[in-house]
Length: 221
Image (cartoon, rainbow, N blue to C red; front, side):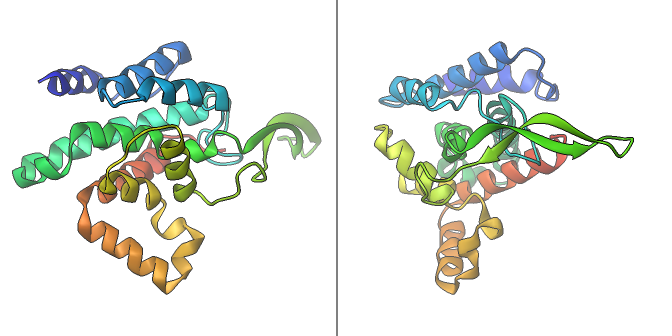
């Protein structure tokens, strides 16, 4: 019942995806995480704060490539994921037991924690509208801290924080990049991805929500 109330509250204004108050966005993100009532979730939030998750961009040149962009992107993915879950259950009620609300919230909010420590502020150059080179504040990427890939890095970071994840949640976070993951070039990895998608619909929810939030809801330079 509590999850239904949370869902209804979020969906009341789900179409307002332009965030102007990042303090509110951060509170909304944290409240959602806490709503799952998972053991050690408060410690996970502390770790995210220490890692710089709430201030990091989501990319260098593409979606949400600005301060606090990762927070903004993750919350959008969560809201899209919740909408997808609701619609899929309406179409096929049997999916409800395979798509626990807390799993959708956790996987969408935490799928990109691997990005917390890779973006470094940098002064970059670009041509303005007059063809003149100018400096601007941007980000460079540095993978040296924990070079372990993308989805798999997020899973390992979360497990190290003491967050217990189900097999389905691990698969959904690990494979959320689908074909964009370089490992997809391997036939073995492709087989693993396909098996994960066949095993749990949570994979499809997270993958689709991430793609929709990135390509339809976020401005790209």
